[in-house]
Length: 186
Image (tube, rainbow, N blue to C red; front, side):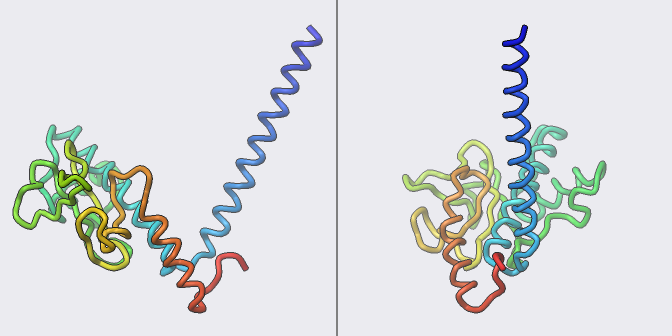
């Protein structure tokens, strides 16, 4: 019995320490995130990532309710956000603009081949997210291109879990700070 109690106390101590570390790290992240200027490149990137996640959730809920995705474009995002907002204030005023003031791009797979659909292609010439839909923003430069083009390096997308754009925003943020912008580590 004594050995079991000692093991239990040891596990309890480890769990307590892990919880304390998580709380301290979370508090530090909230502190520094609150001090980052809203126009800082990293702040805009995080805002776009959050918006895209929320828009994807709205699209998924719309599909669950209706059995189909809404039509492409801003109108489709508006339908999805309005449908979700009937039960809760999700996006009460429709889909927000991206952090640079432009609309998010939304293209369901069925509309990829439509003229000027805005659907992005991968490195092999196929469409990105071939079985679903694309939600993305054009990023800081407002441009997009084919896979590997410099114009696409800052596009923030819904289908790339590795988030390749983060490197571009870290570089933009470093330039921003060198230009005399407020620091997040004062």
